Amino acid sequence: MSDSPFEIRPSPIAGHGAFALRSIRKGTRVIEYLGERISQAEADRRYDDTLAEHPRVLLFTVDDHMAIDPGVGGNDARFINHSCAPNCKSVTRRGRVHIWAIRDISPGEELTYDYNLTRDGVGDDEAYTRYACRCGAPDCRRTMLAPK
Image (tube, rainbow, N blue to C red; front, side):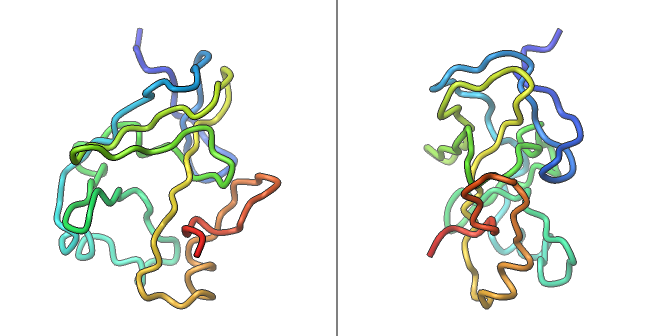
């Protein structure tokens, strides 16, 4: 039996998602975001979002110099989808990223956090289209981009 508090299955938000197997209390550290630690230059080389119809949002920026690529040696944290009304948050400390529950989560509920993606010189219309949000929250801002 797995110690994981969630399982991966198809998601109505996007692709596959992480769904709670049991109650998860507010303040619980759910999982560490793992993968190969790479430079921002290597991240840009590997994942050029301007060439993709649907950009890959699995890279996690740790700081101005480092990103985590869960596609190489990563774990199930990469399946936690974005939501504008999340039940989790990401916390970066000392170069490590953990996902924490910010409210009580019920069994069967999809785990989400706000990706707050940065705008890297892309025009607003193009960025909103490329990073469209489909979380379905009543207060959805329609983009995974961080608010201005």
